[in-house]
Length: 155
Ligand code: HEC
Image 1 (cartoon, rainbow, N blue to C red):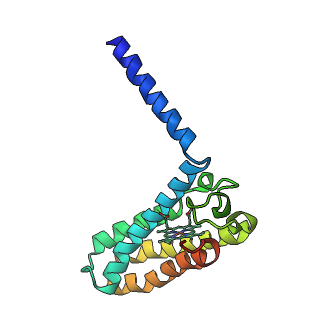
Image 2: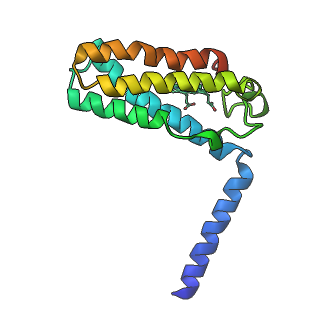
Image 3: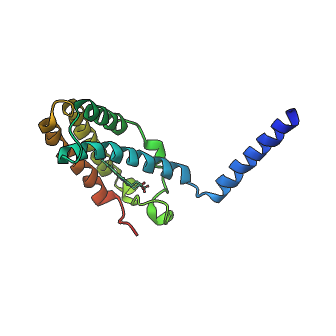
């Protein structure tokens, strides 16, 4: 039983080792920040579908998505953006332009704009379709406002 456990553990560790050797230096951080972006998009997608009328407005669901987005926007994700993890140095793995680091104050302003828009959405989304519609423009604009400058185009 003990031997089995040791064998299983060694296999697990070897497995981990080979993954980390094969992976790029910043693979974990890049995947994590892309996952956060996917979560932004998922929650905003639900709100957008209601705003457009593709999905029937539901105050509770709208509120949940908006509160989630607000929580995500307020997460400190700094550790997912290590120096050197930009697109030119990690081709095919990331679309983050080097400007995210060389022009950091501007990038951080873009995050701040998203936080503000997400906070407004979190307070408005559950108050009816018109309120949701009024809040969604600035949220979408805060996403594209950053992408336009700080995300490289798709290859
Ligand atoms: C401060 C800048 C900034 C803001 C604000 C921002 N993004 Fe991004 N986004 C990026 C960057 C940079 C990338 C590329 C990340 C990478 O590939 O490492 C990205 C990538 C993405 C991706 C692709 C993720 C993947 O799987 O590769 C999606 C989807 C996305 N963003 C959605 C959003 C949505 C929705 C919002 C607004 C709620 C948003 N982003 C706000 C900078 C931002």
